[in-house]
Image (cartoon, rainbow, N blue to C red; front, side):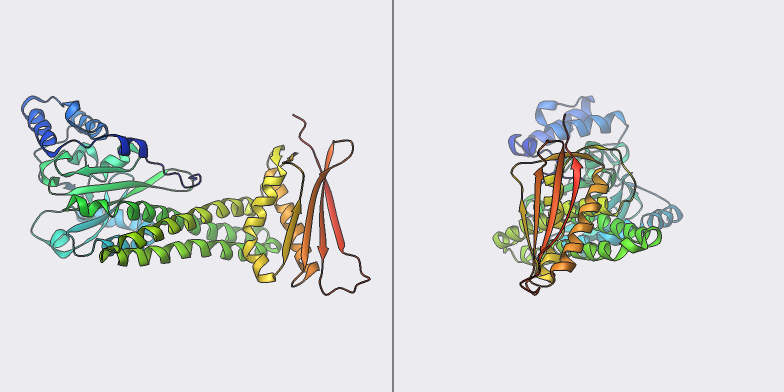
Length: 415
């Protein structure tokens, strides 16, 4: 999860370079299909053609006016089973609906079987006379054809479906966008989607939808970090407090992202789009920062012994310093690093990371407020080992007192 840098999992190139089929072409493609059973590929965008082909092969009915629905008892069981996901997604669903403003819309959440869990939107769309899908509706392509829930699941990707690109007639009034939600193992656990009556209104919400999906995934990760730290408290109580302090530090980046999205949803609703998009990008950066630091934290919190392998020592140090940035600011400590080149050693990455953390925390205690920690990495003269030195320089120590030095050695990777 993890998503590297600012890259998105959906295929942006396809969306940017492929010309959208005209409304007339799509209507004509639907007419030809209904009359002959053939799907004219040249009249449809590639993702839509694939979705229609899957829908046809799985027996979806293009004349259907609404989705099939589970029984009341099965729907209640579905909601109970997915209550954690629904709770985490709720604030993002609300923000998306708020961003839609007065437009006709519905924000939807499904599980990974395309069963609808939650729907939030304007009164006319969600509770009006038209048969809009409700919790318990089954929106897989096999039942509901190409749509904003089933198709993102089938493609494992972001998808936009415009008006008559929907396979069944009952969904033609809407333009839908959907994106899969993934857990920290990159398994798809559901879909976040928004349906709008006006296509242009939906387009302005695309970046917010994508950012909101990343926010839900970050909330899932944050919940797992809390479980991890409880496990540490039970199995390694002496290690608990430093890890809990670091966990509290890193979730602040995620909280910042959610606050930015909240502001974005209000601005988009009143058409302040330029500044809103700047905030969306900042929110994405905050979420990515949280993801990166959370991965480092989980390695620290894992007390499993891994195999010895080549590890970039200098990268590990840099990552840990980034994770400790809030702690450094609170303690008003300066960290100075020195090495001539990237250095790779042999070791267990998690054990090495925990070892480095202990040395950093000891040095912080030694230097006190306003002190400096100098970390030097250099190879020994025989080029067989690397010496890692932590020098704690306190601003309050007597002038005659020498800085405190700690060090350890690691074997160099010779391959």
